[in-house]
Image (tube, rainbow, N blue to C red; front, side, top):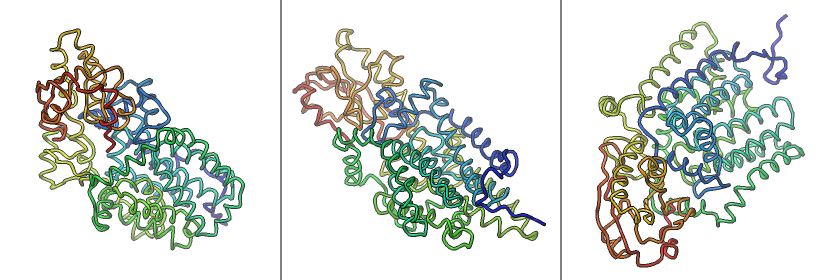
Length: 522
């Protein structure tokens, strides 16, 4: 007599060594992911945002103009434990990518998937060009899916076991997720709405559900208080971004087309099957609340401020659910070959697309490769580009810029240098000055961009200032003397980072007094 173990069976009845048994393919994908990033994260240079986060790590706080505090804390830990080399600061994002693969396999397992389903879910995450790209940079984005999917797994287990105490774990993940990125609120809303639309609305009567909500709120309180104290700069920033039209606007067809490419075109049948499984499949309908959490989150994001990567955190769930369905469909012997060939095709296509999101090729070779393959990553923002897409161009030219600034600074008399400020136009420039400048004898930069504005002009008076990318006619309105001293240029950097360096003296008003006018929250 055979015994079938249902997905709802207590995990104590499962094999204790999951990753060495049915999860072996998941483990293989996870190890491959780590190796890929350990190799790729040593090439090119620091991304502009990474330079900023490293500076945020030197000014730990419960919030920043453009993000909650977790990414700065991660950068602080990486600097303290591993240093601030390129490989060091990208190590934790790589580990987050590994964890995404493990979570996808775990969710597939707990949905009842066997070895093939778990492996296909893990491979779908591994092969997605979007995940390869974000997991190779220090930012909030590699960590965000861990919170979304961690909560989804908690809900899945609550549905299966009725263990309402898991709402405490979900609340903890939600609270930490809010300290990582405010879009956690969107997924939380989507999930609660999804529960309300299904029979599992009965969770709203559980004291553990409200304990979980309270736990999340308490963990979010420090950042909320910081925003209240600083008059909600994040909302002001978002308003400014919408008003200046910086984001590329996409039609619904273009948006979902880019989504399909970012998650790998051959994975499209998998995540569409995942949506079908959660809404219409006989076994999957019990998890419909999770399906609604994705659909509602997608809808809110599309209405508010759609960027292609904003909805990526939900895809590991769809990959896992779709893999369970495809395992069932391909179970018969006549489809056995497809179970081998299709994953191999996914690996091959992912390898072809990988150089567009991972710096695995020398830059000149990448330019030739992209031209030969007619591959051009989608543009997210309206910036003029050079020979490289923004993802790569923003990793070039930073130390070369610092060298030019150092030439101007060190040409000044020693007594004047002590009173000379270096004013950067954006956080990439300021972060580069602060990271590379020490070995060239430079002080930290000041800027009006993002959180540098809140850090202020420090002790500088404005009597002697080096200004990056200034405009002669504009500078002459506020300084008595303006001299063009150097020019910043790099063949591969973003064109907006190239320009003149000015040395200005005699600010016509005290710098502390006019500082509010330099605020640049865009």
